[in-house]
Structure formats: structure tokens, C-alpha cells
Length: 259
Image (cartoon, rainbow, N blue to C red; front, side, top):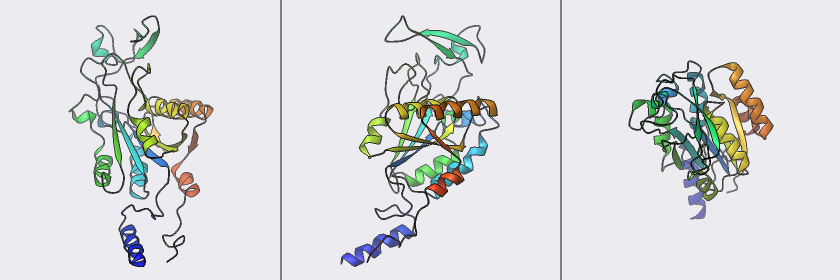
């Protein structure tokens, strides 16, 4: 009976279904896919450098198994503080000074952008190739947690853990703790904005953070290099996907099994 159960688990593993003995499972490690949304690729904040990361993220979803996946999305209400349309006379690239919600005497500088990632719009949706893969995994091979951030019109939120003022936190840290996650493998957009914010908060909260360099992008090579240098200063490990896979190779399915 016990042997039959083992063979059943092996059969499921060969079908690509995550089971406790799967050799492809990266234990205690979560894949983070940050803001890979249409508006940041070909939409209102179109970025010609963004599409190059998609095959790398597909590879991480297709060829690896994760005990937990997080996919974050900007989820801005109309009139959000980050929209230049919310500030008469301002244009994209301008800044404004905003008071902290909890401490009005504290001031933060807010960058202004075109309207983007408004709920229930095409621009707010996750890129189709990634979303299709996530749907195939949900409730079947891996828990997928969608973090919809920056919903408060008064405060922007780069990090998937909290808004920029640490006024309100998402459920991400508690979900990671619940699933026993110790390491975050970071991908997405933009390297110097939401990927940066999530990575730094991950370090602050005690996680090992690994940035897959060729699975993240921003609007220029210079900005990306500066962001990576800063993140390495915080203790983030930076690897390209080939090197990360080489360092995290998985054994053959039967090598560690005794029947």
C-alpha cells in the first residue's frame, strides 16, 4: 500500500503536478512578479525595454515549482495622487510635495505620471502570458497571492508590502510567513521603482532577496544599473536567470527517493 502511494506521487510529479517529493520545488522560496501590467508594457506608460523580461518570467513559471507565488498590481483609483491629471497645471515627470497622512508635518516628494493601472481597465491587467500561467497554477500546483496596491488615492505604493508612508500594510508579509517562506526571487517592473521598493522592504523584514537581473527592467540602462547598485548595498543578491538556475539546479526525480 505504501509503495503504491509512492508510485502514485511519482506519477503525479511526472505530469508536472507539485507534490511533496517534487524535485523541482524550491522549498521555502517564493517567486515575486512585480507589476507586470499592460500599462507598463504597451499602455499609458509604455516601455520598449519591458517585453524582453517576459520570456524569463515564463521560464520561471514553466520550469520551476514554488510553494508560493505573489503577483502584485498597481490598482489606482481615479484621481490618484500619482496622476498628473490630479494636479492642475502639472505634466508627466513633474513632482509635488505631499504631507504624510499620519504626520502632516512630514513631507514626501511625489513623482507624477500619466493615469495608469485603474481598476477594471485593460491597462491594470497582468500581461496575458503571465496571467494565463498563473491561472493554470492557482489552487492546483501553487498558491498565488495577488497584491493590489496603492488603492488609497492619497498615497502611492511602490512596495508590495506597504505604501510609501508605511501607513498601511498589505497581507504579503503574513502570507509569506504562513507558508514558511524565507527567500524571495524577485522579477518585474520597474527595477528602480516597485521592484526596488519591494526588495528593500523584503530585506527590512528579514527575507533573503534574490533579484533576477534579466527578469526585471526599467526605462534606461543607466537607471537599472543605479538601482541594482543600490539594491546590492541593501544586501539583495543579483543574478541573471542562467546563473540562478545553475546555482539552484534540481536533482533527477528518483535520485533522492528510496522505495
